[in-house]
Structures are given as structure tokens and as C-alpha cells.
Image (tube, rainbow, N blue to C red; front, side):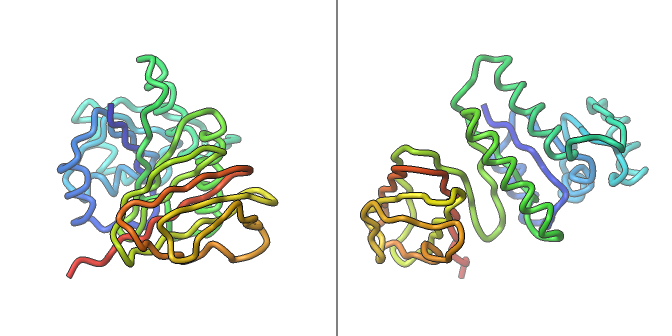
Length: 221
């Protein structure tokens, strides 16, 4: 099941139209102003979540006309609109007994550094609960790895960054220019940024800690 959550960060409406229509979602959840972005790409959300202080009145009316399910919250609350939308997505999958599917998060970067940091914290929180959130942007994909192994597919020369989200994160790899052999990556240092694929498939293993993986997309010629 493909569930998409659309935040209110940076957004390219043409790219977004391609993403939201080519990879058809089973459920599109918009966090407040994320609905503006979806509608700018010609897509009506299934669910609108938040205090509704960012969505335009015109787009709110459009959602109401199209029978979008609206979950409105007070403006004074302990969670961001995006966290509420992510929780809705997680519970939706749980209600179907689906524990392994990723939630795809769009428009979660750019604009404000504090929001980006908060969004990465949300990704980590859900990873610790067993739910992977994959952040998808026009220029990169990002996700959290806990202690585990996985294969990442790319192309020779493509860049990938491995960023410690714990005080110390130990990582091994195969297929990267700078090979890692149970190497300690520190939360207070930049080692792990801008490594390069030497093969089309790389193997990553996290021995200890939490790791943010950022796969940089290659520019289309």
C-alpha cells in the first residue's frame, strides 16, 4: 500500500504533478498547507490534517467540495501539523495490519531549518517504532537506518551521504569509494558526507546507532 504525506515545504509543482500522478497513491494525506501544493499540481488530497492556518480559503473550499476528509486541530497544540498527519498515516497502515510499508514524505525540506530538523526527528521517532519514513525531494531521497543491513541501488559516480544521528554510529559498507569498515561516524563531525558509488549496488550495515542516509539524485540531462 502506498501512502503519501505532503508537508508544506519546498515544492516544484510540475515535478510534483509527475510524482503524485505517475506513482498513484492509495492515500494522499496533506498537512495543512501541503494541500495548497497538491492542488497546485492538479491533485486533490484524500485527507487534510492540521489547524488549517496555512491552506488558502479557496483551496479549503475545493477540498470541501471534493469531500476530502478534514481532521481539524486547535492552533495551540503540542504537535506540528506534519506530526499529526504522519501519525494518521501510520495508524491507517496499522489498521490494515501493515507494518513493513514505508510512508513517503514529500515537501518536507527547505523553507525553515527548524522545520527540517523537526521533520528528521519525526523520521527517527517513527523508525524507532518500526515504521520507515522515506523523505522524497526533487534532488534527494532520505531515510533512517537503525542497526541492520540493506542494499541501496544507484549508479556509478552517484553521491550518498551517511550522517550519524547518535553520538556515535558505527557503519560498514561495500561498493563505495570511501569504504567503511565498522567505522565510527560522529554526530559532531562531517565524516560520511558525499561518498560515491563505485558499483550500481552498495551494501550498508549499521552496527550501532542511528543513521540518516541521503541519496543524492543525479541531474537529468
